[in-house]
Length: 134
Image (tube, rainbow, N blue to C red):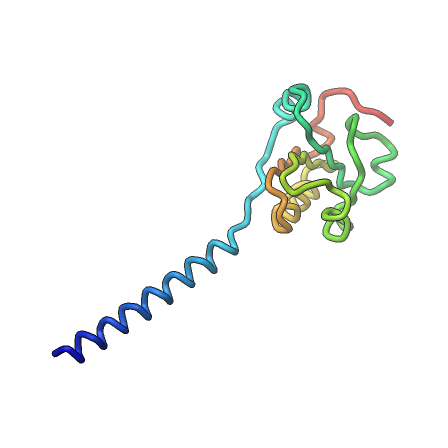
């Protein structure tokens, strides 16, 4: 009887260890999802005085034609190569926009996948009703 109890105890321990390692693997793969934010909400946050990064993921030509004041240019197709080196820290608050919202959604997802924690998809500049600069 003692041997059977011992065998069951060993099996129980093996199962617990297996479950714990699966939980650790799952926790390591959780990615923070980007959030969407409206132009009005973004404008309010920009005015609150806390630090943020405004990231324009359009082409350099589109950026030169007009942009939201204070934006920096980082085309969506260069994001993976440049983001970690050029954006100061992964906990920074980042607002991402493009022309219509497609590239910004993709860029926001990319930033979240590489570890940026506070990413907000602002959508397209076409929906920005406030001042712009050239």
